[in-house]
Length: 319
Image (tube, rainbow, N blue to C red):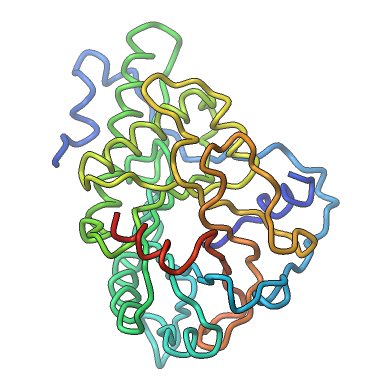
């Protein structure tokens, strides 16, 4: 995943078929929905004075040993285009396994914002095949951009009357199911043998409350589970985790979902900051975005570890 500067600054501060979305809105209320250019209000404003800290470039540099179960997460951004590779240069998963001993790879399968969606789908299939050929456990993640409906526009209600609020709510909930279906489709149905689909949760649209964002998240997770028969996982950093679990949403307990936590910092060593409010604690930990790996044709790659054993990893992939 490519992390925005705002995310880096935050850490420095301590931190099945469904109807098309438009069909969920009745003719009487459709006119009260406005499509505004999407803008993220994911994180609190920064003073702009923080400097980026270069985190660990390898598992060894962070303090991990050969006993830890290691992995990477990649997307189309790890496949730079060139004249020789017009669709992007492939990743050498054989080298990643032999040189670094990785056991798993998270692959971006879909994007709710539609950013170069075709490339994400293309490289998910290519990377999945290449990684599995090396005996790696793979998992798909969906980069959520709530409310875009795949159009690059954010759906929001005009005014405060009941009809407008109801229309906006219906639109948001339809969007969550649409993105869930996209995630499952691009993950090839999320068959057993692959890790459960992960919701990559790091975007909150401007104008959305945390309650609205949490309801969207619930609808996405439950729809993925309905479509696949498997309970998905959640990827988030400490800021989003704390915001999410503090919102009470009927019918779901977010902390019951397995957590892939993003928490960077060489001083953390081999244990991320405690997540006491997450009942299952952490399952995967992304500890840096500065990994320098031979076999990946870019300078920076996200590095991860699994909390259990290799046997536990395979059990999760087949659950």
